[in-house]
Image (cartoon, rainbow, N blue to C red; front, top):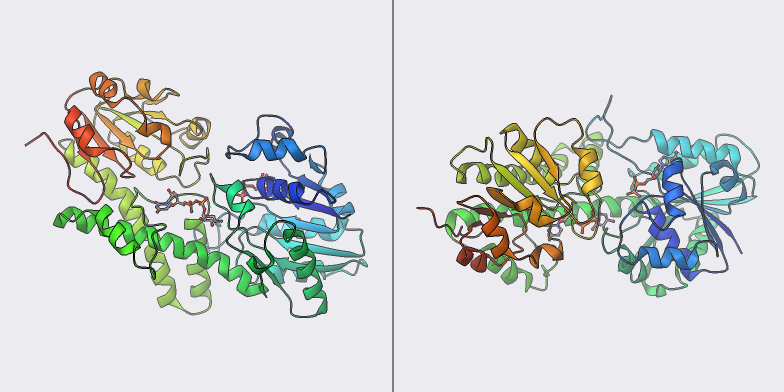
Length: 457
Ligand code: UDX
Ligand code: ADP
């Protein structure tokens, strides 16, 4: 039996550790966090994050072989293996501001591990997405004092996506473990691989060197985001030429070399990873004297900003270039369905722009209203929050579909149309609704990358 600790009880640490606890009942897993509120929530029925299926797993393991605590020093003292799963936000100050990763919390954790570890051998697992060579920096800190502990730092990036975390953790495409190519490195990687092998087929557990592992994580996110920016760039061209993005995306996705996934046109990607990781990748390239490579990846983010702005401009121009005193119903504020997470959600810049035009906004989201309130705190203008989407739409001039929650497809759009101001507009930021049906009800429908269906001449 080993004592496994995870520092950071967030979107990554919580679900990942719950899954390890579920499949490895012989080990004791403790998850610690600086936030007492978060830990209290993890110990309740009201978990701090919404993730389908997570509560069931937590209920199964909590108190059995999984524990949530704020006692970080004690946790480190007892640990044989420490996962570091803290947030690594984009730096907002000094050198690399707006691009590089802010590593202050990472370094604090390294120092806490150094001063509190008591076991003879401790494996430190880098779980957070980090700059390439962060593990080496962590190892330097850990080896800076001789306290009799042998630390081995390995990289094990997490590829789960929010909303599907439990499925992704249960059946991962691969588990990647990066370590040093010496005996101690191999041993640490094997220990971690054995843990995953409780439920992941061995052939899906990949071993690599530390830097390949770190870079693979950044690059995987950059590639995924690039696909979205690519398809979104073509929505603009479709709207000019009369081509239909759904047909184009279907046609190209059938090419095995391209594949059908991640080709869904959207108002723009969001979430805590894509923008941050690409900016960091580009910063890394600049740092290593590769400005052309940096510029290439930067353009993925610029295209995303362009798409968000284009969506907004379309709302403005199709409503006679004035939104003042008009009510806009915002369906969905989370960055994607099945999560309450609003980090970097495209809904935020869109709401800000609408408010600057003096529109009033009424937001409905099944899980993200608290976070929406937090994101919009202090922003000037008339903002309403409605759990009930019908209330959000009542009297509205436009309906903006930002997040494709299943429940939004099942709404009674005739009832919504009847309650809205006329002419009534729908801007579908996910190409998710039945546009022909909406048009027949009487809406003026503005999809992405396909001809608008308008009753106005
Ligand atoms: C992503 C990666 O998928 C995951 O592997 C990594 O561990 C963390 O970052 P996540 O941000 O949770 O996961 O969600 P993801 O499903 O990748 O979606 C990111 C954004 O892209 C969302 O805003 C989503 O709506 C958008 N998206 C996704 C599209 O606009 N079109 C698509 O076809 C797919
Ligand atoms: P992610 O999406 O990467 O999991 P989150 O922000 O959801 O990121 O979670 C990161 C967690 O790490 C937060 O709950 C935060 O309080 C915690 N955290 C940050 N710094 C430290 C630290 N030095 N020690 C312990 N926990 C930390």
